[in-house]
Image 1 (cartoon, rainbow, N blue to C red):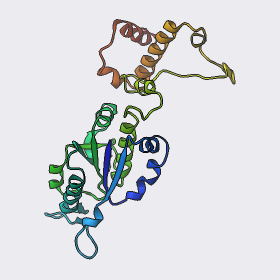
Image 2 (image 1 turned 90 degrees about the vertical axis):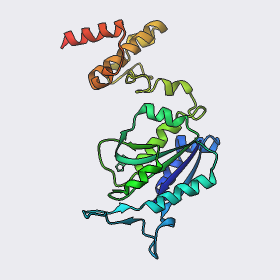
Image 3 (image 1 turned 180 degrees about the vertical axis):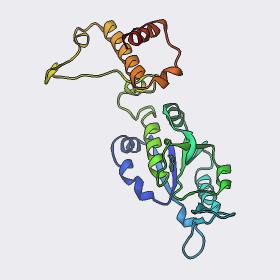
Image 4 (image 1 turned 60 degrees about the horizontal axis):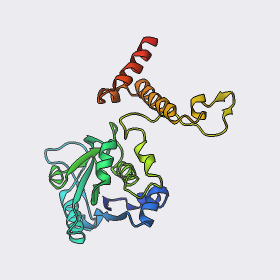
Length: 244
Ligand code: ADE
């Protein structure tokens, strides 16, 4: 996968790209990341990339030309790739695991990171997606794009050592992950559930399924509204509701 990041602060990406999963993906040639500092396309002696809004009002807006020219440069460098061009915007569609899965299957992602009050509206004509990390406002799109990149890159086949672990992640199944335990069997009076130690895989699977559902029911009931529940799951939930 290729990723281009259009940003005024390319150095912000040095650390995430040189550690852990993203470092590994780059070393394995599964990922190539390139920075486009759009200051290069700013206007005048001071290479301005922002300006005041027509019609008045507070704050500055990113001018269209530097972003259009950045995309042009990327298109010239990689003319043949299928590109997903993603605008970082708190007013965009909220990022989630299914978006991470979609992004992980793309040939070429381009993230546009703004750092001002907003974008000149014409910049939106360039993009395929407008995405928000969540319902809060960050100083810029850089941190948001790093999170999205990380979530997508770890799903590229061959990046994670153990493919199974991505499939059982919280969120990928529509349920939160069940509790996990490792040695010792008892610690500070807290014992590992008996079922995990008896080697009965069918019982263990059933326990994990139930605990996943229970955790989701208790912490994120909103996730269950989107899920088609099995009869078994409905029965478990009824039990917990009656207990309250
Ligand atoms: N830029 C500023 N806030 C943001 C957010 N929540 N998501 C994506 N980009 C942003």
